Image (cartoon, rainbow, N blue to C red):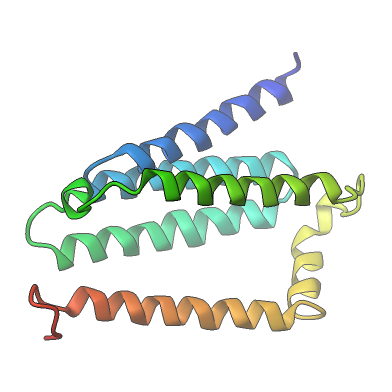
Length: 169
């Protein structure tokens, strides 16, 4: 086994173990920290694949920005620790497993049906190529994602501002 394979399996473990920590943790602050660790592992995988721009963007935007924003949002909106398991009235394990299995099958089908090009992108020009794609033929999906993220942030702020009776402050 070469060093690249060892580093890959270490980074894959660094993505999967914290993801399981997010799923099985009871405290929402602990979930945010587990998510932070998983995002660092994903950034490492991007860097290992030679997608330097994508890896550094993952670190700056998600690890540096979104995780800090998430932690501040959790800490500023809740006066006491939120335990997720206390909020769930009935366990919904079967629907969750069915939906997760369906998503897994769709992703597996997409993975198997994709023709993977070898050395399609020059590693020295990943930032330039990504900019050309994002602001060229993929500008519409890029803008749609930005609008969806804006709607999610507005919805999260609205939900965080509601009082315990269900009204808004």
